[in-house]
Length: 570
Image (cartoon, rainbow, N blue to C red; front, side):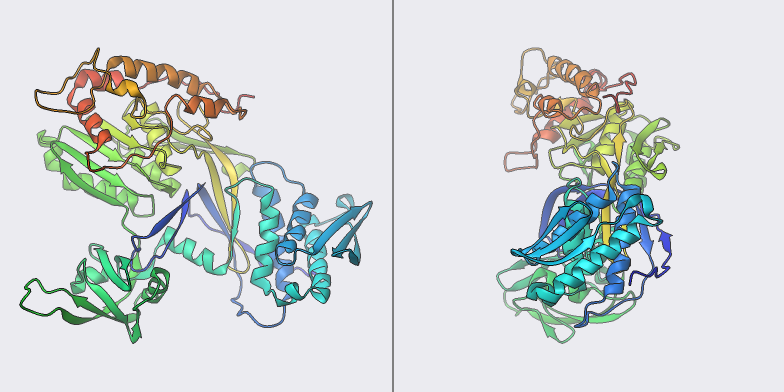
């Protein structure tokens, strides 16, 4: 019992972070997305090689030992703050009560008693740290012994398979940490990896109307694009499966598969001529590696607007390619400024956010990370060339902009390269590392904090805009450098508002790492709000146009603070 299986950890290098969401991703993703406010900023993954195990009727105690030992080691070595092994393990054991609420632990002196209701099932000697050569192994042994004892008397535990038990134990372990540290079982972890790294699919987004599944978007250069699928096509069946009445998640799972594998998609396409019936068409496709598209762009008047919905492995290349596409218009002066729209962006890959910021910088610190583990210390520096050569740059943020989006905004604002417009962002300033576990599940752990170029910690604050659209003074018409032309409506931006925002930023940056309520109070100076285009126009784009078209106003709004280095002030 408890023998070391000697499965060696192999480091992964994917660097990720962002807000987690549940989405029924298929060739790309359906339009249905439930945003989870628990923003995850992930900076690395560590993996364990293991054989796949199919779930059987018997409980695999050796597997449980390997899993729990790996989890205890990972948390105690890598979590942001020091964690005591005994407290962590006991929290995990107490998690079994989520399976059977009648289970409880009683600690007395050197004994730990497992109770079922008022009855003591068994007593166990408490591992002694001073006598241990491998404390994680000792506590993993104890945890497995307690699981074995609980299964001998608890019907609920007997019915729980390994995966269900792991979930209870790991959720218990992580419950005493922060809200961004969590466990994902085998299936959920597979879905997480697909969102980060891509998957075998056909490249479509889709939605559901009553019982019909219809395509809403076809990704460029995807298998769906190459065979001629169109938005509006109704999916009737996949291979031989009629998908009428299916959920989006069920359809997504059927559309995914190994890269290169074949599928047949049967669709109904509405006729453009009312005199003809709708057509039933079948398409034979081969799945390809799909990384969801996160960048779209268009020219609005004389401004190039680039919308980034999240950060995955193709985000920075797609932004770079967009700038290449518009290179002629940028150089000729037909485009007067660039708007980078990060509203609602939940985050994603840290490296991609750094690369996006680097596109608009010649030099400087983009972001720093600081934690307890030596590998969590990083300074990410700009080493490229401003590809738009100092052209006016505006970033749009709102209360749902988090993690990677906040890195881009804070870097470009702190280095005096962009004017940020909107509201205070989400304020997600911790970094998570993903540890791949022996069951191919994942444990996400917070392991460092983000520090902006000007030296303030992002966590609990986020990014303060230079133009706050939730502040009534934005519409003050008194001392304005730019006024609408006759017959035009819209907000009028005043110098006084920008001066007020710059004053607020000084206090913002001096907050250090004190989490005693002062941070939320500072955020009150520009309350967090969600801003999306509506029937009455787009307030933030109107403000962006004013800033871009008035050079005096634009340069007045730029912020170039002196480094404060308060990030770890007590």
